[in-house]
Amino acid sequence: MGIERLNQLYREVILDYGQHPRNKREIELPTLTTDVYNPNCGDKLKLFVCLENDKIIDASFTGEGCTLSQASADMMTKVIKGKSVEQAISLSKTISAIALGKKQSESQMKALGDAKVLESVMQFPARIKCVTIAWWGLDRILLGLRKEA
Image 1: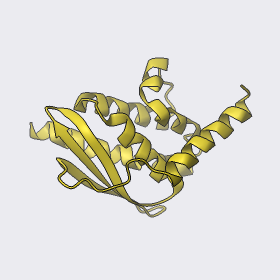
Image 2: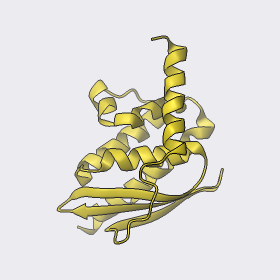
Image 3: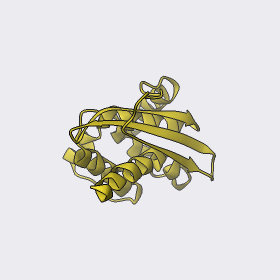
Image 4: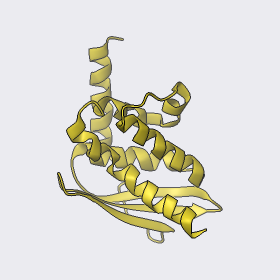
């Protein structure tokens, strides 16, 4: 598959998540929540996470923003469901490393599921915060949970 076709496929995946989010909803009794805001472009998200025995049993988000922030939040909530807190933190670290231009292993990329397509956006510095805002919020609540323990 040529690079242009691959880029088109990535754009289609991102648009699908942005326009048809699977997890854009409020969770009634979440274990953890956080609000994140990107003042540069106005993206606002509220993240909801439900934990049971250190495992993420549900995750969702609400908010407004560009297609990238919405798609990234939806991909994130999808991929962290069923994961341990440590696994979710590891996924978030992978996204952060990609944003910094660090090459990740094939297994790290595979672990991201559909969110691996976000790597294609990281070449545009103005869009990095749009992609990482949800992941940053996830880090904040999960790492905060670790500090409380």
